[in-house]
Length: 195
Image (cartoon, rainbow, N blue to C red; front, side, top):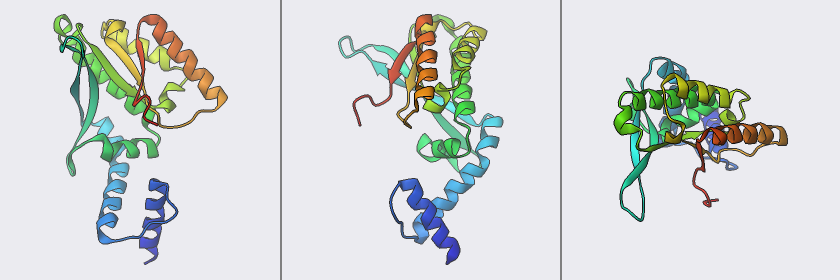
């Protein structure tokens, strides 16, 4: 009973509500969440993520102008998982920076395999605000793009609305984004105007 009460408390914290009632259904979901969290470092290290590309269509011309880069986890125990199932695990264990750079590099590598056809588009990649506040972010992004010979005009950094920032963090993030923008990288807000 105590174990289930602790699980219910953790579920309430995850949902940002005052309380949560444990039942076998949400208990199994909670156990699955913990299992994913316990394995997420290994999943990244073993390159078990793959990318899918959601087309971005120009509303005037009806032509594809780019794609949003979407991560998927091919877990040996859980099957194919969308960010709904693994992103909180990435954040909860403090791997958002590692995951964001990993995804960005994976995309740059993919673009570099067929530059003639893939340089025609803009690829939008989500970055958490934690990563955007990394003092080395701009250097890391530029180094990865240059390593794969990626034209900066092919890259769009999309800012996730995942946390509020203090003044120091905001200053670092703005400096990073300005430097990336000066290189020709497009800066976007995820779900702009939603909340």
